[in-house]
Each structure stands twice: as structure tokens, then as C-alpha cells.
Image (cartoon, rainbow, N blue to C red):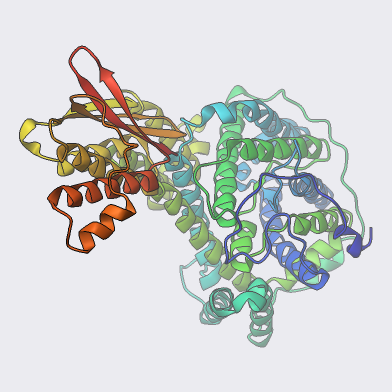
Length: 594
């Protein structure tokens, strides 16, 4: 297919979004061909360092050169298919530029699988990962309560912290004696500065080239300072190759199957977090996680992993560095994925090109971009947590789970004496954070009511402080979005002041009801229903008061009308209704879309 033909492909429609002003190319926008080529080249260059982790997995498993090539080729095939499905969209893809790479937490499982059943065992854990995706996919829309932004944010944040450790080791050139290499540090620092600087100050034209510029500067410095990797190993790698068919086996120990399901499950929750972060970047009106889009992302991942497992590949997940690149380049066009997918497919048959590409991205440059990615994931996860009002429960979920995830970094020798069934979990801070966050979220949901009422004492006047405290307290428990909370406080206090200023009315209570999509507040008062449709404060009355011929009653009417106008602007729905006819109680009902 010619490159120009990609620009003419008509993709399935996706949900409309209002594009942020900072975004150069939205999901459905077609970049000019030169820009498309440069953006795709950056995504490809960002994925290449991930091949080094595949080499590490092969080394841990003791694979031969031929088996290693098969592992890389099969995983590339899986990555290519997943990227294509997500770029295309429809029912089998998320409709975005989601670049996948190997799920590196499988490095803790792969050696055990190979020891039990060889390459068939390695293919078996990839197939189990795919089956986990298929089982999770229909449940995701129903699991919104179990996967709030607090849990997803903690997992994404910890994935950034987990990446930070190897990133800084590469960027600083730390050796076995924990000594820092000055030249490596200089290269990484300059490369990182170029990426950040161009992304921040490059403007709309150059910001999309941040990674390319960082790579070129990093390569030039690496060459001048003699930090390029040796080319001696390239001679043993053939020019061409192909994925090999491998029949997966599920005859694995139950503990290994359980560990694989856990790694896969948390990997897909991480994918949900990446989907949410992509939504936040590309939708100026973002409100909540789009679980339907996340489900399609999981579907594409499952299909790709299932096919890749028969080609000797390993389980994949969304690439954090490529997500960070989307943010840095301000380009989220699906057409990038359409061009990237066939390039990765071609690399699956060209092992020497893959090896040479790894040579072109030396360790200091890899470290610099991994530091940038770790920063992006850490901040992105924290932002997800901060999108909702906090309370002691949500703070405990986020804080305890992230701190627990630091255990492998603080006590790396803990696994030496741990039972074999727990070693896989204790080796990964990312897995620990996921398990703790999910457990605490299910535990803390006990006793959290989504309906609450609090009386307003007779001597409280308009009750502004009490209403504000009530809303802040329950908004934290219910995880109400901060912008909705602020509007609810303003509207509820305004309604209370309207009631308090009406003769014969007294505030009695505030009642609230919440679900993921709606927040409803009732300000209950004594007496009959207040007519909110009156128009006493007309323009004529305002002119009458300004001219000096109006009285105090005219001013009251003007303020009354002003209060009603404020309510209609703060809330999506305002009405007055009777609560009880027997004891003469009524309320002003405020509805907020959430």
C-alpha cells in the first residue's frame, strides 16, 4: 500500500470529542504526509528499546538464538495486529493510536513456564493472558465501581515509579559497584532536556518532533563520547527470519496459571488507565472513564495476544513511552497507528534490522526517554486520583497501595525467604500496588451509602457552612468530580439563602443522592412549594429601582430573581417540589450531570 493511500482510508466513526486547543491532530484528523511519516518514525523509535526487554526475558529463560528470534518475531506480530485493530476502531479496537509492547512483568513468570514446558509453556502463558482479556472484556462496563480513578491512578502511578528505577540506572550509567558514569549522565541529561524543551517551547510546528530531536542529539553525543554499543554481535543475526508456529500448552502448575492471570488482569487495568489518560488528553470535556472504549482496547489486546501465542510471542500491554510520546508530540491521530502496524509487521521478518535499530538507540538515550515516560506516568496517575474529591478512604487506597508497591525497592532481598508462591508478587511493586488497591477499594466500599441526609438546626440561618461541610464530606466518600462539587456547593448555598430570605420558610435539612452519572441535592424547607417561575424582578423593576423610585420590596424582588438565574446556570436542573403534604415540607431540587 502506498503511503498516500493511508491518508485516504475511511475509518469507522468514533464518539465525538471536543478537541483541546493544545492538540495538533485528534484521533480522526489526517496529518499531512510528511508529518505522518515523522510521527510514525518517532513511535517506532520509541518501541525499539522494548526489544531489549525481550532479549532479557530470552536470557532469563535460557533460549537459543533461533528461539530468541522467534520470541521477538512473534511478539512483533502481536504488537502489529493490536496497533492495527486499535487504530481501525469499530467493535474490535479502541479507535486511537495505542502502541503495544511486551508486558515486562512476564519476565517473572516466563522462566518458570519454560522450565516446565519449554517454548510451549511460554506460548501457554501468552494464551492464558489472551483468555483473561476475553473474560474481562464484557465485565469492564459493570466493574466501574471496582475500578474508580483512585485504583486506576494508583496502578498507573506505580507503573511510572517501577520504570523509574531501571530508567535512572540507564541514564546515570550505574555499574555493579553503584558508580555513576559521567559521560552517560551528560548524554542522558542533554537528551532529556531536548525532549522536554522542544515539547514545552517548540510551538505547534516543532513540538511533534521532540523525540526525534532528542534521539539525534543523544546519538551524536554518544558517538562523540564513545558510548555507542558495539556492532560485533550483529554478524550472528540473519537478515531474514519468520515467526515459528508453536502449539501452546495449558498443562502448567496452578500457581503459575494463577500468577499469569494476576499479571494479565493488572496489565489490563493498566491498559484501562492508559485509555483514560488518552481520553483526558484528547477530550476537552472529559468527565469520567469511558469503559466501552477501554473494553474495546482489551478486546484488541486479547485477539492480538491469542494469535501471537501461536507464533511464539509473549503477552503485551499498552506502551507507556508511546503514550508519553502522544502527549509530547500533541498528535493522537489514528492514521499513525495504521502506518506503524505494517512497519512492525515487516520488522518481524527482518531480525538484523531490529538488532541494528537497537544499536542506533544507545543506553543513555533509552534511559533519558524512560525517565520522561516514568515522569509522565507518575504525574498522569496522580492526576487521575486528583480528578475526584478526596476523603480518608480514597487517600488510604491511593497512599497505602503506592507505598506498598515500594517494598521491592526498599527491601529487594525480601523474596529470598518468601514462599515460592509469593515470589512473583513480591518481585513486582506494580503487582503489589494493584492487589492492594483493588482489595482496599472493595473493603472500603462497605458502609459507603450513596444517599445521605443531614438536618439543619433552626439557629443555623442560611446554613452555608453546614451545607458546605456536608457536600465536601460526602463528595469525598462518593468520589464526586471536583468541578461538580464546586458548582454543587455554590448552588446549594444560593438555594438555601433564597429559602431563608422567604417569609414563612425555614431550612430543615439537606438530602443528597449520587451515582456515577448523577448528583441530586435537595434543600428541604418548611411550608409550601416555592414558585421558581415567578418573574417579579423584570427589567422595568430594575430600571425603577435604579431611577430611585423603587422601594425595599423592589430590591428584594431583584435579588430573588438574581438568585434563580444563578441556580439555573450552576445546575443542569432546578425545580421546586413537595416532600411531604402531611407535615408541610417542600424542597428545592438541584440536579447535576456527573
